[in-house]
Length: 459
Ligand code: ADP
Ligand code: MG
Image (cartoon, rainbow, N blue to C red; front, side, top):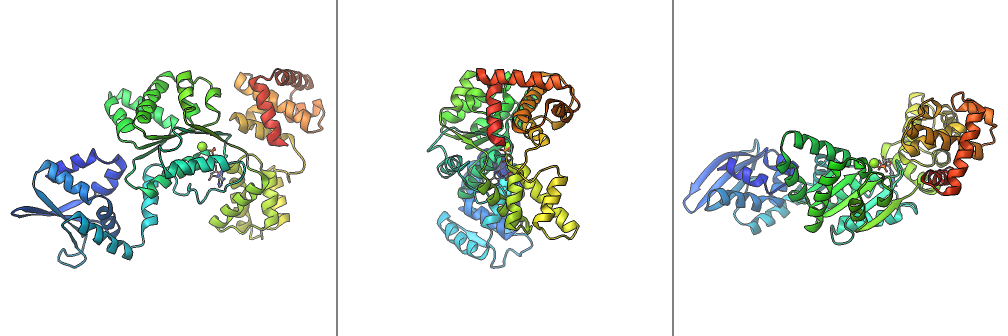
C-alpha cells in the first residue's frame, strides 16, 4: 500500500519535492482499528516533521485513500524517538493538524533553512535573493518587474523577458524570482535551467526515446519556468521547435515564464520569428551597466557578506577600475581581500592601488589599451588573447577591429604603437580596421551599434 501511495504521490509533486520529502519516509507500522487505519511514519527530524505536517499531510492521506479506500490516519514520529513519547503527534483531522503545526513551528525556527534547501534542489544559488541584489537606476525597472512576477506569478507580465550584458545580474534576478516564489509557497513547482540544459535534456530524452517524460516534466509538472540565456538556442532548430511547444503549453495554462538573454527578442540571431514574437508578448526589460554609486553599494554589500574590511575610498577605487561587469567587480574584491589577509596587510588605498596595477587594472582615470581589449572581448564573449592573436574568423576579427577602432579613438596611442599592443600587428592593419569601423558606424550596422554601446560603456 505504501509503495503504491508513493507512486501516486510522485505524480502530484515535483521530482525534487518528491525526493526530498517523500522518498526518505519510512513506514514503521500499519494499524487496523476497524473503521480507521493508522499508518505510523518515521521522519528523520523535527524539521521534516513540521514541514510534512504543514504542507503534505492531506496529500499523503489522499494518496493512501486513493490506493486503498477507507479512512486513513497518519502518525508522524521523529526517528529515534519512542513512538509512545509525547513528541509524537497524532493527527486525526486536517484542522487538528493545522493547530499542531502552529505549535510545532513556534518551537522550531527553521523557515530559512527550508527555502534554501528547496532553492538548492532546484539548481539555484540560495544567495541569489532579492535581498542580496543592490537596486540602482540601471536595474530598478527590471528589479520591480521581477518582484511583481514573483509576488503574483502569471498575474502581471507573462512572459517576463530580461536582457542585458554579461555579468550584470540577469541570472541573479532570475533565480531571485524562483526563490521568492518558493519562499511564499513551497509547493510551487519551480523549474530553473539554462537554455543549454534544456537542449541537453531534450537530446538525452530523444536518444532514450523518453519524450513523454520530457514533455510531462516541462508542460505538466511545472508552475513556473525560468530559462537562463535563451540566446543559446539560436540556430538550433529542433530545440527551438520543442521550446516553442513548451512555451505555448505553459502559457496557455497560465503558468509563469521568465527568460533571460543577452539581447532583446528581435535581435537574437537565429531565433525564429514566432518565438521572438512570443518572447515579447509580456514585458521586455533590460538591465544596464550599474552607475559608480551602485557599484560601490554592491562592493560594500559583498564585503559585508564575506567579512572583508572595505574602506570607502578603496571601494571607490575598485568601482572606478571595474566598470561594466559586476562579476568582475566581485572577483577583484575577493582577490584583494585574499591578498590582504595572506600578506597581513591592511586594506588601504595604497595597497589596493598597487594590487590593481598588478592585476592590470588601472586606477580608473587613464584608459589603457588592455582595458579596452578586455572590455571588447567581454562584450563579444571571446578571449582577450584572441583579439591579440592571429585568427581571422569573423567572430574574432570583428571584435578585434572594434577594439582597434576604440583604442585609437579613446587613447592617444599612435598606429604603430597600437599595432604592437594588439599582439605585434602592422600599423596598416590598425589603420584599415579604423576605416572599416568608421564605415560600419556611419551605416548604423549591427557592428556599428556594438561600437556605440561599447563607447558609452568605456566612457
Ligand atoms: P549575468 O547572468 O547577467 O551574466 P549574474 O547574475 O551571474 O550576471 O551576476 C554576476 C555576479 O554579480 C553575481 O555574483 C551576482 O550576484 C552579482 N550581481 C550582479 N548584479 C548585482 C546587483 N545589482 N547586486 C548585487 N549583486 C549583483
Ligand atoms: Mg547569467
